[in-house]
Image (tube, rainbow, N blue to C red; front, side, top):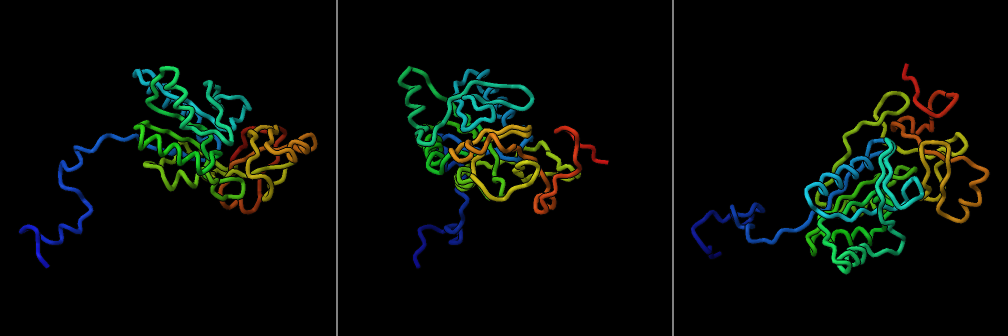
Length: 250
């Protein structure tokens, strides 16, 4: 074997580039996914990210898919809201950016709430915006559905995102242990089967997405409750209370 120089031949096997070798590479955008169970503050963080960037003069595009309010907005449980563009099932998110350009508006970043409901193809489009247009993309959402399986959109984000960040606000199960499983509760019972996308809140309410689910909405009450793995597996919702709210841990 002929060496090209007198350096250690094992250097050719190193994945670490020489110092400064990437300085000529053009900057690219980032695709970041912040995830966690309900009530951990994902929507609040999405609004904070938008606020922080906007106050520095950057212009963003705020998107949402199936907000709990049923309106085209990002709404947090602490009362903060922000108007957003609703992403439909067939929406091309790249086209939303092009529409902003057509209006003469620059787009520096994109914020997407409820990103777990995006299709894998839409996540690919966000990655394209980051790589080809150098737009920073911040996605926020739940990783797993009521069966503890990854949402397709979340799975694709785990595969493609430059950064994966669990939201650090701890959510507790009724027993006091950290909770990270979103149990779907129908008429007081944990269910394991049904439509993957059933948008509801932690309160006694129902917002269904399929025709069959809407037909049943008058007869059932759907909500979600965060549980630890043990109580999620057991379907144990904890002590019965007179109303939905905080449970005592002692």
